[in-house]
Length: 216
View (tube, rainbow, N blue to C red):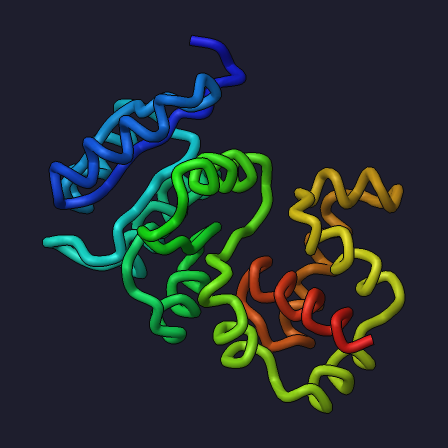
C-alpha cells in the first residue's frame, strides 16, 4: 500500500452507515477504509491491528460517547486524527469533544466530497468544524469581544507569531522551523499561550486567534 494513501477506521454502531461511508471514502483513491468497528472496545482492538491515520467516530456508541472515545484513543494513540461524525449539534458536546482531543467535528448531513476533503485536511494537520456549529462554538468557547481583545494584550509578540502559525494547522516542528527556534522552545511558548488564553488545546487556541483577527 502506498504511503500516500490515508487509512481510515470507521466507528459506528449501524451497519448501513458503515457500509455507506466505506462506499463514499473508497470512491477516492487517496483513501482506504482499513477497518470498521461497532463500539469503542472493538475500535481499540482495530486500531492496534490496522494502525489507521484517521478515525471517523460516531458520538453515540453502545459502550460510550465521542468524549470518552477521544480520551481513550488519544491517550494511547496521540498521533491518530479523530473526526467526530454525528447528528448532534449541541454546542456543549462540540466543545467537550474538542477538549477531549477531537481534530474535527462534522455532521452526518455533510456532502460526500466535503467529507473526503475534510479527512484529507485533518490528516494534513488542519482542525475542522462543521459550518453549522462553528458560530455557536465560537460564542461558547470565546469570551465577549471586549474580553477577547484584553486577552490578546497579555500575549507577547513571539506568542502571537506562534499562535498565528499554529492556527494554520502547523506542527511544533514546522513552527520551530518557520521562526528559527527549537521545538522545545515552541512547546514552552504554546504552554504559556494556553494558560494566558485559558484554553486546553490547540484547536481552542486556533479558534481564539481566528475570532480575534476577525475583530480587527
